[in-house]
Length: 286
Length: 293
Image (cartoon, rainbow over all chains, first blue to last red; front, top):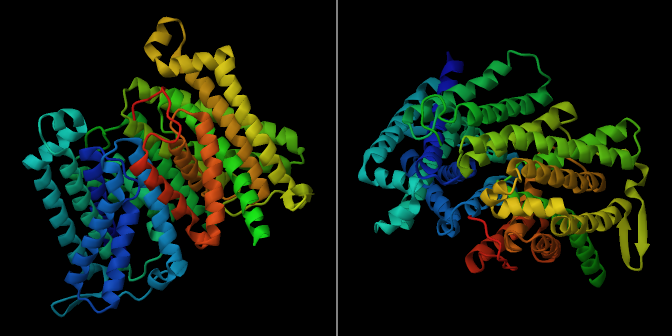
């Protein structure tokens, strides 16, 4: 039972990252291959704050704020310029972030990672096992999902859709495209930061590999297979893709090849979706 | 101190030549088709593994390199023919093309890891650690091959693109696909040639760098990132700009070790990129040729 709970908690955390990516990529059409890096910033920020003695809620809020501002900062140079510049900024952000996680040993613990992140404690109640933590992750996902749902249906959400469809027309009709993009970067960064904080507190150990480019590609795959621009898509994707590693443990593959085989499957899924089902399972076409 | 500086400079030039060919071939395909071909890094890696495998079968170096180039060309044509062309027919957005390309990159990296080895590999060639002295400069034979072959192949690409009929046809399709189609040039066929050429050429730095240092399935993305930064800094559409900027970037990266720890050299490249897009987004060499970004 604990195994199942653990799976659900992780899938819910990744659903929050998927929502964050969906908002950027699906809704506004801003490519991002750095969501894992932003999530990692949130996770490390949480770990550092918690180690300094901050309680659960302030530490999560701090992680969300730091991740949001970093997401904005890395996006800022490219917000003026569309398209391929953003692609490179995004790849660069991810690779540089991994380098920072590995090399800034004083704060991040280097490649060995940061162990011993304290257990979540809210009003004296400790959330230790996966079954207990499930409450936190479910409430967090529900909050994020609800805000995403509201955002998409608000006038602001309509503006974001319009930016994806025709940016020039939007700015010609007097709307502030740049301001909207800045806002989206902040919100998306906050989502990813929240997911990172939950990941850190749940696993109680973080290292650079947990947030490298393969994780970012995994998140993109989640959004693509689930489907862009819908809430259901962002939730189906993580549950589906995180089940694959579990299924792989049933096959007998030598341990050094498990990682490559898993990623190979993700890559094949990505290509197959793009070719034959661009709308994913429950979404719209990118 | 001067010795160290000379050493770092030479190192930067060698790396720059190998990255330069990656950048030039990326820019060549990009300016022809507009596809942001991230999978180029996957071809780079996969070809190196092919060459390594051939040499493991006791095939001499030159045929092994040629086999790697042919495999690269075929692989590139498969990607263009089966994926990019189909996506273009489906009227996919650049974002979807890019995601497809990332999928191909992931597949190529992991197929390399599964078929060959997920670990760091080294070539079994006795001459890979032999050194030649040129005054104060010490070059290993693989480094010497990089410095000679990569600029030569770059020049060949340049000449092919501007002097031969096929090269001109590809450029014609790139600058105006509709008009080219009216004059009986089939764009998709030209794109196939373009990707075959750029993929075959990228096999050369892939293999030589693999011989010089070592090869891992997942490191080529960093090389591609440096190359693409060079493409932008050199001015998109200019092959020479891309090649020269690669050398400049690599020298800066190499010499920066004197001031900041080598672990941050990726950060140095990225900082240069940020400076460029803030100050001179059109690149150093401005060209009339412009593709919608």
